[in-house]
Amino acid sequence: MKGKYGLLLVDDEIANLQKLQRTFVDAYSVHLAQSGEEALRVLRSESLDAIITDQKMPGMTGIELLEASQKDYPNLVRIVLTGFTEVDDLIAAINTGKVHKYITKPWEPGELRIAVREALEKMELMRENERLAAELKLANERLRTENIVLRHEVESAVHPDRIIFGSPEMENILRLLQRVTGTETTVLIQGETGTGKELVARYIHRHSNRKDQIFIPVNCGAIPRELVESEFFGHAKGSFTGASQDKKGFFEMAHGGSIFLDEIGEAPTELQVKLLRVIQESEIMPIGFHQPKRVDVRIIASTNRDLKAEVEAGHFRQDLYYRINVFSLTIPPLRERGKDIRPLADFFLSYCRTKLNRKVGPFRAETLRLLESYSWPGNVRELQNEIERLVLLAEPEKEIGPELLSDYIRQRDRSLARTDGNMKLAVRQLEQQMIREAMERFQRNKSRAARSLGISRQSLIEKLKAMDLSPG
Figure (cartoon, rainbow, N blue to C red):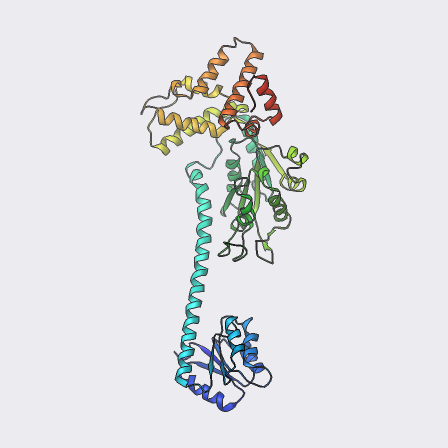
């Protein structure tokens, strides 16, 4: 055991110092000092585990020495020897953690050895607990990061790393992406809900110089306001009630990789201010920290809103808008790229066969025709859901017939057939059908339905009135 722990013995009387030395020299690496000032010099030059000091010394007292050592050597076992019966100051020092234990004179060598051994064992246990707590914290952070990534990677692990398309509109989008994937430029992806904005964001990341690093997708509107700052930027242990340990935010987890700020138009004002700082300064300020942390993150953002209109209405910061709108591209809705429907339908059919373990046949020609004639207000996401439904309903090894399609897809086709070539009537019926479908899909939420249709809320209300449907 000798040499495992280092002890500093402090007493201004040489006889007492020699007695202390004899008590511990066989079991510990012992260092001596005859004053508080000398003891501090020894502490700075040696690696020590405990300090045992006399209380009454010329100049600096024992308690003053232990107080002075507390800041720079917080894990040091601090024991004071006193010959006085007045121990109020010592008790106060113990209560504040400045002194671990006091022993009154005259002390017995055996008693002092036991006291020191118990204090060092307690210190060793505390160190081990701190080490385990630090390892657990790192493991928790790693698990949290992995869970976030895995949750979003499950889908992409099944889907190939490519964008399925057949339309010139998406071909043009891919040409634009080739210009930005190899850069560090901030990208803003615009488009209706369900058009595939996250797929495009992942495409950018996987074809960038950060492809081997982490990709963190975050929905800016899905996190409660009271948790936004902690979730995005992290916090320090004890910074607020419930903060039992340090926590990394999304930006720190994404360090070295990319962060996808999905639906940034829904970010609350307080988050917008802090996002601007991250983009401008490449640093974050976690809650409870007094120094900022540098982060190296590529930002990809998306929105289904007209951010320029949101800026004009005072709902989105203009300075943040110009920061994220460096390279902007708009994903057209599926109704404007009809040539994508067939390749997407074929892809989702193959995907759902594997996912659901269903050996169903191909689409019949009439089924594909109806799929291509439908407007898909829910875009690619709605198409995927419809194909999954078809795979569940279809008989094994048999073709997927049009009778399995959702009623609203087949009814719309019959409705268009009744227009007898009248273009104005067909357009009006198509518009009304799309409005009904959007209102049904979003449970009569006019704001969300209007956004999915690409019109303003007021325009939707007026159209509902014209259709003799109550907007309420």
